[in-house]
Length: 315
Image (cartoon, rainbow, N blue to C red):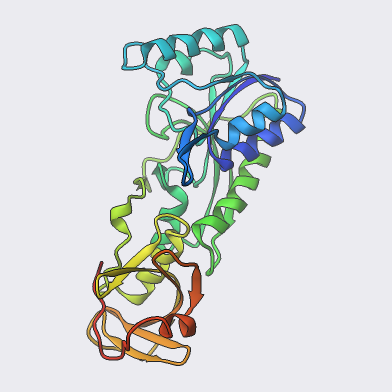
C-alpha cells in the first residue's frame, strides 16, 4: 500500500521500520523538527527522521499543521507535499502534533493511529507511564481510526499486554513498541477492518508527565510511591533532598510491617536504607547523587551523612 507516516520518537520508528520491511511504499514521512540535545545543544534529528533517511524516504518537518496558525506556511507546504505523495492511508504514531481536519480527510483510508493503551483507557500523551502509576495489571496497543477528538476514534484492532511487577516506563515502552509495529502491519494487510466505536464507560486521560511530579511525597502509601518510581523511569525520575542536595531514587521495594512518620529514615546501615511512608515503608535500592551514576544503597550510604532517624524532605 502507498502510505504516508507521521511519528517522532523510537516508539514510532519501530512501526515505520516494520511497515517498510513489510513492503509498503512510504511516499512521505512527517516528523518533528530537529531539536537541540546533549551538552553542546546541537540539533538532533528524531529517531523517525534518522530511519527515514537511512531508507532514502522523503521527509517533511513542519513546525505546525494549522493552515491559519502560527506556522501557516509550514502547514501549507506539508499539505502540498502530502497531496503530491497521494497516500492511500496515513499511519500515525507518537507524532507530537494534532492532526487538523484537512489532513484527516486527505487519504482515502483516512489516518490510522497506533496508540499505546487499550482505549478508551488512557487517552492522551502519557499512557505508558500512567498505566504503571495507576497499578494497572495490563495495557496494550489500539489501532484506531483517527477523528477530530483526542484519541476518540473507532477501534480497528486491539492487543493486550500484561504489565510486569518490575516494569518501568522504559521496559514497557519497548514491548509496546514492538507490539504496535506488528499490529500496524497486520492492520494494513487486511482489505477491510471492522471499526468499533469506543465504549462510553471506562474513559481515562493520561496527562503529560511533568518535571514537577518528580518530588517524592512520602505521605503516600509505599505501593503508590514504588509504582511512580517505575512509571517515571527514565523521565523525569523521582527525587528527594538531603541537606538541600537533590537525590534521585530509581528503585525501591515495599517493606511490610515497618511504620513511622512519613519520610523518616527507619534504618540506614550496611546495604539497608528503609524509609517510612504513609502506609508501610520502602527499602531504597537504587539511587543517584547529583552528577553521578545510579548506585546501590550500600554505596549511597557511604557517600552521604548519617541518615538514621532523619526525616527526608519531599523535594
